[in-house]
Image 1 (cartoon, rainbow over the protein chains, first blue to last red):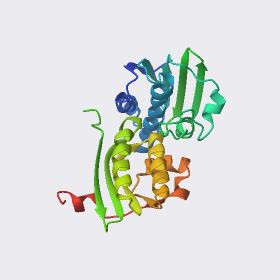
Image 2 (cartoon, each protein chain N blue to C red):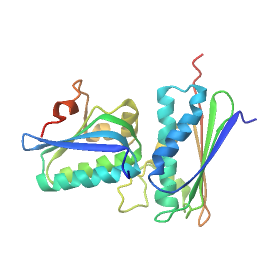
Image 3 (cartoon, chains in turn red, blue):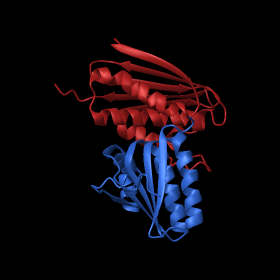
Image 4 (tube, each protein chain N blue to C red):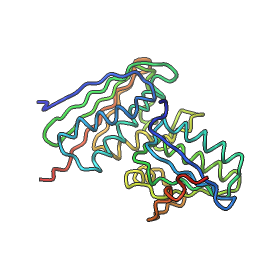
Length: 143
Length: 121
């Protein structure tokens, strides 16, 4: 029973990082989230999209698929999917400060941020097929 | 057009303090511009202190951690230090995940420092 949803497809250009996090946060504005909750959503989405751009598609341009859903009046669901190179070891990739990037000054904190700022994080990845990140958060209702 | 979400202005104080006033959003896309501009300044001036003024930064994800960490290392390499001024609660939350509160000095000032320098050279 999905109350509302939106789908977005964008090429993996870094310029789009800002657009996606704003678009997703704007979609969830109908639930009247707090300023902190909006920040948490924007940050987690930015991390997932950046991962697809930097790691999934590396130096190529592919499509990133974003699916945002309102599950009930306070639970949000965001799925960010790429058809890039995939992650060899998801558990290792989730470790704080772990990064495979040697040159780009990546902090290795992407999954740590997603885990801390959302309630649930699920990562499914297959080498050569791509990565799907699912983020779920229950918002605090203020009335 | 390529970097419309970030604006950076620098000012040298007392010949040894480089203050960078950042405005906009720091993500993987905008971090590249800040990085290249700051590194040119740091490598040519060798300041004793780099002050990153976050008063007008409205968003930062973990790309900002990589950016600040990289400048911290560069400043240490030249025997200098780094200070962060006025990060928002959201930015502080991201920074605390990286243990930044233990690494660099994070300060809050009430004075909007950037306005002191606008229009002055």
